[in-house]
Image 1 (cartoon, rainbow, N blue to C red):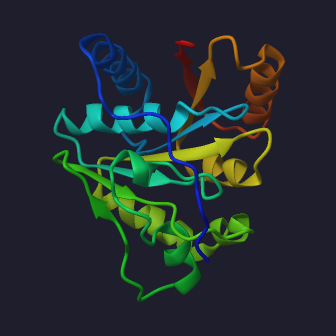
Image 2: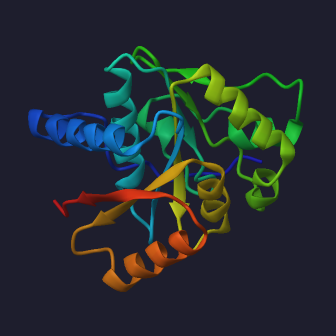
Length: 210
């Protein structure tokens, strides 16, 4: 089932300052991730419009270092990665999980060497039921063999069960905090929930308000 989505307000344009900031985040992630960790979620406590952009730029930064990277849009109720990379409103993750084995995997190549994207796909009201499937686990293990790094862009942690499931399936997570917008108590609550679930929190990505 398709649905009409508002246009994502940001672009992949990067000035020198932004590139340096993104590369710094990448270097920190490289230091914090152990050699066996290949799957990372980027989440936030509350709604954060810049999170998909940060995820995309981080993926580009890793690809520019010669890594084979797969970006997956796990925010199926508010997808953005297909717009950022101008991939059209094509099929994606939900379609793959609904149709099961034997289905063509709708991973899209981008204009950045080594960077592929799996769009969110068709709107699916109860996506969490798809994310708990054994088939999804098998796909993640398969992608870990094919790529150096998998980055999931996930919904806001305190409001979406999908984010809890996706975060638990990966090796670690990063929490995006937006200046003057993200509430401090929401960040603390999210951090406590993640630690209670024994999810490895690599750190916080600070996003300026401008």
